[in-house]
Length: 124
Image (cartoon, rainbow, N blue to C red):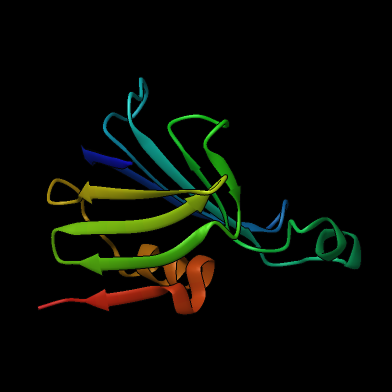
């Protein structure tokens, strides 16, 4: 399956109180039709590890299309962000056009933290 959309909004934060980092892309700021949320805790305990919730959490358009450690590859380019996800024996390719948003240095750092070695940056 392939999902494509134009991102007109990006959100990102480091939430110290709840100990997670978040980056989100959506077609609109408030009334989303298409979105991708990426989160990762920066403080995991042994219970999180045992439950398998110690990695990157990714959600695409609905909680039904979400999970931990489902990203196989991510490519960040000047004008696009691509994700290859493996969810319930299905490969999902997401292509987000990011020309309309300002990809700040902090948001790139957060993506690197969330996705780790799965993220490949290809800037011109």
